[in-house]
Image (cartoon, rainbow, N blue to C red; front, top):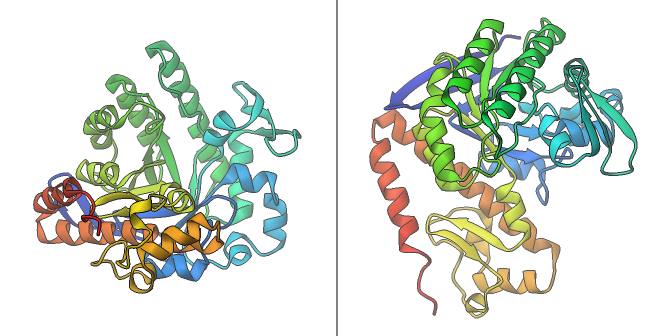
Length: 374
C-alpha cells in the first residue's frame, strides 16, 4: 500500500525515475493525458494505455458537477467507473473555478460559484476538495489553490500565493493519513522569484509527497515560463516528484524536462486531434489543408501508431472534411502516441547521458518542417 519516488538517472537538471503506487509504476518524466470528464476524448482507455500512458488526469471541478463525486463513489470509484485500472491524478478544481465558473466569490474559507452547466450554486474549500478527490478514489491528490492569473501585480501575486499556502496547510490537514495515496502541494508566486521561494519553503514546511509548479502556462508565453522554471523548479525538493501543471506543446515539454520537471499534463494532444491538427517530429500538421487530399503517405513514416500504419494523409483529410467521428479518433491516437514516444525518448536519453544531443536533434527535426507535398 506504499508509494515512493526513485530517481534512476540525471543528466544536467533532467531526471528520470519511477513513481511507485499500488496501482502501478509511473515512469518519469511522464506525460499525463487529460480525462476531464472521466474519459480521454475520442479514445478508449485500453487505447490510451497502448500509447504508453502510465497515468491519467481527472478533473475535480467537472466530475463534482457531473456526474458528482458521490455518484462516482457509489459506483465503485473513478477507476472502475471509467475502466482505467492504473494511477489517476485529480486536480483540485481551483483552476477551472477561476476560468469557467460564473459569479464566483473568493474568501478565506474557499470559493463559491455557479456551475457553468446549469447555474447551480456550489462551494469548494480545501476540505471539500480533499473530500471530492477521496470520493473519486484518485491516487495522486492535488491541494486546493488559487491559480494566480497573468498578468498581475507583485502585490496581487503575493496575496494570492499566501492564500494558497494557507489552503495548502488546510488541504494537508484534511487529507490525513491515506496509505497508498499521494498529496501534492502547489507552488505559486507568478513569475517572481522571491515569491516562488517563499511558497516553496511554506510547502516544504507543511510536507507533501510531491510538488507542483502552478500558475504557469496561463498566458505569460514560453520564454517567460521557461525563465521562471529556471529558478522555480530547483526550489522544490529533489527527492520528490515535480509536476508542471497544464503543459503543453512538445517544445514546452522538452524545455521543462531540461529544467528538472518530472510530470506534465495537457489537453493539447486530444483537443488538437479533434480539430485536424497532428503533432509529429517535424512539427504540427494541419490536415484540413488541401495539400493532403491526394497524398497516400502517412502522417509520419517513422511513427508506429495505428493511424500512421494504416491510414493515409488523404484519408485523414477526407474524414475530417466529411465530419466523421473517426477523424478525431485517429488523430488523437496519433498525437497521444507521439507525446508518449517523446517522453520515452527523453527517458532513454537521460539514462544514457545524451539529453543535450536529444534536444538538439528534436529542435533540428522540427525546424525542417513537413515533408514536401507531392
